[in-house]
Length: 200
Image (tube, rainbow, N blue to C red; front, side):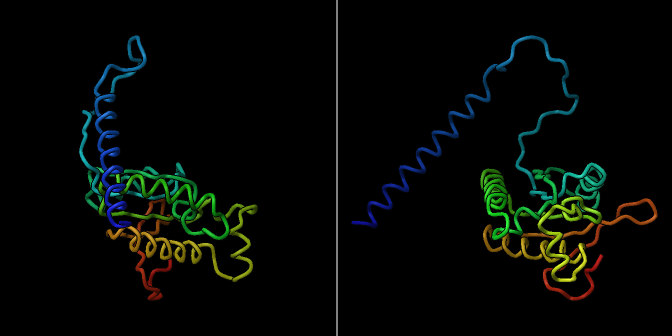
């Protein structure tokens, strides 16, 4: 009896989800909600293609343009879904310390991965990240308490989040760390296991 009820509820949920998708598709195909002439019209053609990956990175304006170039030119990805927030994966790495942040970040990742059927996630951290160096941030206390450098904490959190996302979404997760040398930004791959070679 319980099994049949569960199947029935699953069927109802799927029908509601399908109906909601249909309504949204019809709504998006309608007339624009704002009247008048547009103030700007993009020269880039609109593409309704599925993104090849989700990119989780810091929104730091010094690094973001370089990171998007890295994704496009270095990783040869032409279409991506972007999640750029202060600290990048930091929001996903501290569920015990910042549970509300982690809950919102995980909801956002889940929504993007499932709605876009994403099978690859790219996580990027960078040196000199304000979310880690802010003297008021809780993470600074961790640096002082453990004696680890900020970069070591960033890589530790990259690995932690990478393992978590891999387990939860069963997709390919890649980790990278960006740093500046001679006026250029370089990206190095961070392995899931600590081999001692991933230090920036």
